[in-house]
Length: 457
Ligand code: ADQ
Image 1 (cartoon, rainbow, N blue to C red):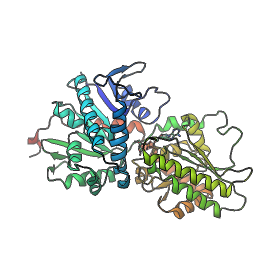
Image 2: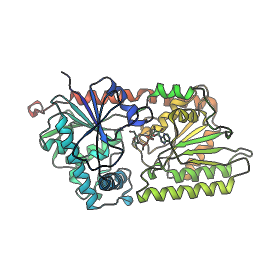
Image 3: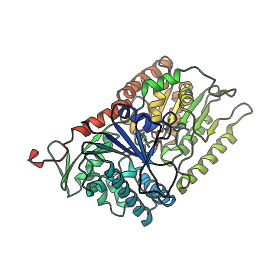
Image 4: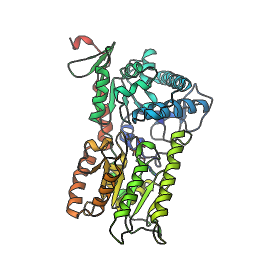
């Protein structure tokens, strides 16, 4: 009998219709396999030694509880105040504390135990993201031999930056316990292989995989995507006007979680710079949708305050009775509405200083009318830029460069818009989300279940 697919992620969807991202991403894999999804319960709790079944889904879902203290130390602490800034090249924001690290290890060891008790020999496990770096190591210690794959949604850190960790050598050792390490881009793969190359415990095998002590792991890129056709059809849907009565004449859109990695302050400053030199009579808006996240972490409070100040300043400088240049919306927008907002926008600004992939870029392209498309202004530092080279690529650290790109986008001739859009759409279609999960699972299933080294020598 074919084994089950066990997915482990930090968040577990509580309502499949409302949540985007990973739920949509894994929908196909979950629908056509005997699948189980395990993730953190949205509410803290003290019953931490058991998995709770969540009912009302097409596949099995189990939640593990985190205590209040673990949310503080494991989730907000080690995951989001150490690993996240490390991977996004913000060593200055790393908040290293011993209680963070011990909570991270403890929670991972517990989840390893909880998952191990559920396992059958043919099950395959797919762990998601930086919350679970030591999960396979914990499971191997318990004797788990099943295939375990890992996908890192955020950038792979540079070798030199790993030194911010108190035990940098465990980063490679933990990852090597997975049978497959999936990363977003070819550059991520290069950085990961560089880490293994620099490690005397690692050895490269003829097929490119990495032997690390007694295990062999493979490192591959699987660029994540979206449900392209589904999103495009939502964008075309007729409905109530997206802005109600306050429809701006023309607008540029930005959609991000409010995170310092998304380059929002420079985006606002560049828009302001563009406004200084814009053609007379033109009154474009920047519609920025940015719901706050991780607000208990200091760096997130700081960026929230900074953005409010800049938005206030831009509006103070340029606003007129009938025109508010920056419309800064601090909350989530339903996906169907978001799709239509993208479609009507003349341009989309993605200014990430570092970003694993950036799905907003792909959503914007999918939502456009191919006969009259808008222009994607895209940071070279977003993973999506590795393939989407026909977007208007910018350096997000250079305000003038972004401002110039806005000017070019606002007046780009239709023929050029169509060409750039068609090329970008080909990338979005080729990296559709079902392709992503199918490819990952195919490669994981092809990995030898217990490695026989005589194959290699
Ligand atoms: P994120 O950092 O969350 O994801 P991104 O890839 O842009 O970044 O995905 C955000 C998703 O949330 C998009 O689908 C977007 O539409 C949605 N979203 C954001 N703000 C919203 C709002 N206000 N209302 C409604 N929806 C909103 C991480 C990595 C990325 C990687 C993804 C997937 O940081 O680099 O692309 O995982 O692997």
